[in-house]
Length: 172
Image 1 (tube, rainbow, N blue to C red):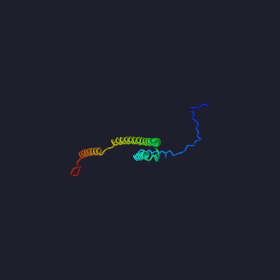
Image 2 (cartoon, one colour; image 1 turned 90 degrees about the horizontal axis):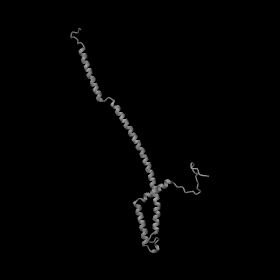
Image 3 (spheres, helix red, strand yellow; image 1 turned 135 degrees about the vertical axis):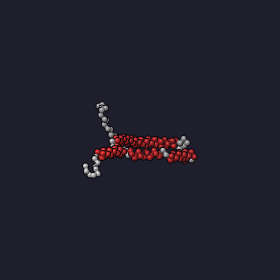
Image 4 (cartoon, helix red, strand yellow; image 1 turned 180 degrees about the vertical axis):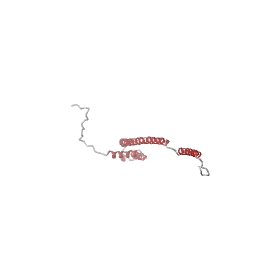
């Protein structure tokens, strides 16, 4: 029977059970190690360790030396340490990249929301300016009232001229 390419494969179950681990806890552990490996304290510790190793194996009596001059065992230890340190550092960097990606996405979303809010407020301010241009201002009202007073004074003067004056004798 030929395998069909338009259908997923059957899941193969392995009889070998791999140990389960918490990836978050392992990630946190790897970040702690990576942070430690990037400190001056680690460099001092490693320098002291290598200096003591070389000093012991170079200066100690022959019967107490456990790693002769080419220091093969030291090289093996440092290689082992490096072979574990590199993947742990990469894992920590990947986790930091994931956090940075999430943070950048949140920043982008917040920026878009801020831009939308700013555009909305700009439209609102423009609408208020248009509405205020149609509202009578204090100076406009004063000028209208003064004009009305002048008109009333003019009408009063006309009214008083047109009104017959009463005679002092009281007869008309």
